Image (cartoon, rainbow, N blue to C red; front, side, top):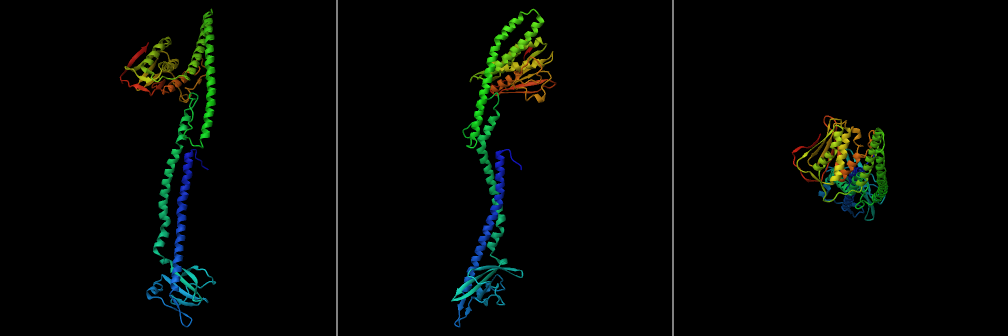
Length: 465
């Protein structure tokens, strides 16, 4: 059996089934009710006709009866007219009076009773519907029979009954489907808090453990689930907080031993051994600094009026990393607009994010190539290199903490790009990766809090050679 995964779709589907069933059953029920009502009206009319026929019977002086019907009314019951017929019978079944030419009863009377008997009689192509009404008349038992040819049944009743199902069906179905549309709108409006909570839940992760699902406005049936999820998030955040505090404390405690170790290495006579050890210490120091940065980012708050110039940040990062690039036979270039490009944010944090991107690009760029920092309007920074690029399969994981494609490679803990992603998120921005035309990778930092739109003319500001 097919099941909808969406509660809204499931509710609408069930309502649709109910509406289809209702649109069929309701007109059918109304049709049966109307048909029954029409039959009751017809039965009542036949009884009234029988009473009227009895009114034309009079007792005769010799103890028998005579029949005195006006000619105009008698014409309605004539066989030539063919619409109505009557017969008056005695208790023994003998016909006293009849509109039929052979003075026969319309239907042979059944066992004597005191209740009207309705019958259907077929005569040739005609179908007669009538009543045998037992009566007491001047101390004698009589039976008055009245019938009507169904082919000449009352036109109004006949049309109503015959056309009712199709007419009401075409009216009922659109009304019910209109109610379904209204029902869908009501359900979607009622589910709006749940949908909003679902969208918020998608944003909850290791970097955003402070988010909680709102309980206000939530349906009563969902509130226990929301409360349980928030309590689980509280426990999860407490675990993350303990982990971050441990990481920060451990990083702080490692700084002093690393400084002492660096001093001791400088005293080693074997310079080659000292160089190797010093490189290992530098890698450890870089890891410790990155751990401290991650811990700092968890409590970092951007000032309300704090602004940064992306052009100045790019120039400062290029100037800082230019000597490192030159030492490895590489260059760093900045291409930006002449005027400042202001965004809401912290210049130091933005500088750290950009520095991590440029350092990552320099680590993968071949010798004698340049890493370009392009600052484009409205507030976007592109860092491109001529390295091997990033495979498409790795792009969903590259910004995760401690993720490394090659874990055998020394000198990288997989924290640099996760720091970039966290800084971009704190500034309301995003970081993405793409392919550079001609080979290489392009990392893009995009921010939305633009304060002053820059001019469109760009020029190369800094080229470190």
